[in-house]
Length: 244
View: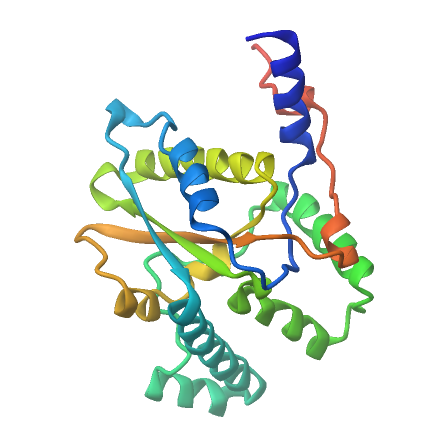
């Protein structure tokens, strides 16, 4: 690899951001195909490519947005209703998560500081106060609106390869996001989009043994200030495990 190529790659890696406000402009099919072709070259366990994707655009994307937002709204209403609301949620199951993986859980203590710092910085940028539950709920709902992106991609992993399929899917997703950025597109990987698998499976013939691990919104970034959010990274040395 030439020095200019390595410099370009380093710039792409550092410039990519999680975009949380998109323009509605559709992605040309040839451009999306090029991104997928790049991602297809991701390495995987014994070259098995133990992942599949479902791409939602146009009417299917709009239908999924409506269904996911309806479930989100039902879940939030149940939470606001206290014990009685939660009991109604359990009885109706409308809004109850049905994903393949639990996406709402307590982070380990050692990872909480970074999580909280990132969340606080993002909400400060958006002007959302700590106790403003309505504003926080509104911002969370945007996940299920795909942040207004024209396309959403749902990523599935093969259950038979266990955690190694998840590892390979992560490599695939990173390659896809870097290719998208290099080609003028923006992305946001979203674990929240794995909360409800039912609506997605109703729209796509998902192969047996494949589980929904996350989604990614993709399109063109707007000029909204949220897209300038950069939480930064720790020093590489912080990830090193010292010798005994």
